Length: 113
Length: 112
Image (cartoon, rainbow over all chains, first blue to last red; front, side, top):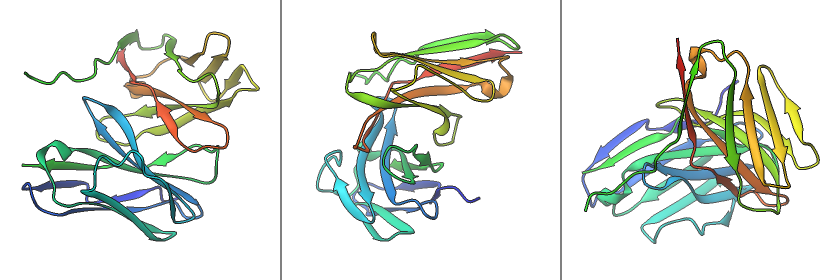
């Protein structure tokens, strides 16, 4: 079975550029989560959706970050403009329901120069 | 000054021995707990979970123990193999919510 699929796997871009990360959750899962992982702060939840609706975006660092989920099989995380401190690995995860384990994709390694 | 990253505790275990990875969780209201394994270059992978109405749960080669009195969780891996080398995270969740709080992780090194 296909797991959570993220693209791109790696992204290197210059500061000030717009970055778009993509995620396809596991089919049938109704919750989707975006995380960021750094050596400094570990794994941090940025935002999550239930049935395509954003529920909690309190982890989004600032207005430069935005996330959308136009349908049950696709979500994007956008950073505009990007800054070097945004460099991290960004993970998408999905879960079947509340109080069910989240399943993670393999992440996008983002480097902002 | 230079930033300092999280210091991951490391557990080194001889191949074939049993491993025990410990975790102290923070929220006494948490009632669902999960262990994840993260290999280099990959996302966290679900290993086993346990709900607060249980104190022990077993999977294939893994056992999770929950002590709610002292807010402690442990993961036991039997007959540790080189493929078990990874960073292991415990995670806690409060019922009805979906926000998961992850621990800082423990690095398991298996010595062949």
